[in-house]
Amino acid sequence: MSYIGIDLGTSSVKAVLVDERQRVLASRTCDLAVRRPQPLWSEQDPADWIEAAIAVLRGLGDDAPAAFRACKGIGLSGQMHGAVLLDEADRPLRPCILWNDGRATAECAAIEAAEPASRAITGNIAMPGFTAPKLLWVRRHEPDLFRRTRRVLLPKAYLRLALTGETIEDMSDAAGTLWLDVGARDWSQRMLAATGLELGHMPALVEGSRPAGRMRAELSRELGFAAPPLFAGGAGDNAAGAVGLGAVASGDSFLSLGTSGVLWRTTDGFAPQADSAVHAFCHALPGLWHQMSVHLSAAASLAWWAAISGRSEKALLAPLGTRPEHPSPALFTPYLSGERTPHNDPRMRGGFARLGHGTGREAMTQAVLEGVAFALRDGKDALEAAGPPIEMAIAIGGGARSPLWLSILANVLDMTLLRYPAAEAGAAFGAARLARLACTGEDPLAICRRPQGRARSFVPEPNLAAAYAEHRALWGRAARFSRELR
Image (tube, rainbow, N blue to C red; front, side, top):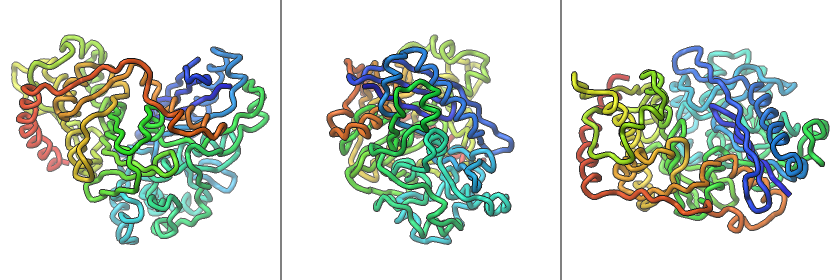
């Protein structure tokens, strides 16, 4: 038997085909575009997701036809928080408003005023990136579309609808809407009422490892499956990544350096710390939750600097070696799309500071890496205020390919980071594991293990960690200035 995981990301759709021994037999990726028609706006056309998903599935079939045909289950992972508004025929009424869209700031305050228990119910402070404020924005600014809305789905739930005909969402993704009672793992009618919605607007809820529909028969035949694969509930992207890494026991942590940055900790209970903008969400497995600090521009900061510099990211990093000798004399604040933890301010903006005639590209590149690390340290401090210290984490994401960046992070965060050679399959691999669990009912602890192979450790160096601790105070002044200039 084989299983497929599909990760509907922001910049691409990725799919992996995995066998019974959890070996990745094939992998395909199809790029996506983000549209920014106005300042603070970030949107995608849901039709692009379906086209990309079909393309990666066809690619898997081309690469491993026998295993593809024998596939028993498919798991979905998805970018969180996006708002797909559907009419009575389940057709999208407008482009999806994405997780990094910042237009709904005023609506956050309105939701918390309408439901004073919002933070207690959802475990989170209202943020413009969440789904509920987006719907209130549509209600205020596009009232005709709001009146025509019969259903609201997250991105991966819309992809599931297209592939199976079912409207189902998992707990981990639903927890990021601001409509879920996260402790009870059920929709909150009080939070829905705060945005003018009802239970009928919401999909059914399942745990991420439970069955959640089958592929439409005609599509299954067209793609070449022997029988329509069973779909799992799946997970939001970070929860799927945690399943793929084996972060399924209380205290397990990972650091993700993707477009955004995340520091994750698994918890065995609902542990909100909303006032510091720490997220408390459901995990993709029953009986588990997690806390996260979230940073909107991590590897995106390096990509932005590469585009500005006219150099590839690889070319920018190559002269800097594999570990820093000392902090860069320049400073960078990575608030290109605002920030979540701990500031919850989409209007914050980034910038360089302490530049002089002698400041070169290398110093500025190192400052970008350090700025992201300092922002993640702010998030780590917020997480540790909500629980015990985090002493070790697995590093994943595109940015984790850089030993220099991981060395900087280990010293700034004052914690050990582990990088596994097989950890890059990430959310798609975790989604494939959820597909297997939905099909077999196996014990998640037996399936969701840590990556194979020997991990490379990045450990704080006392002298360098002390230098970064001193440098952080200087960076903090620049960060405060960024907040004041928003």
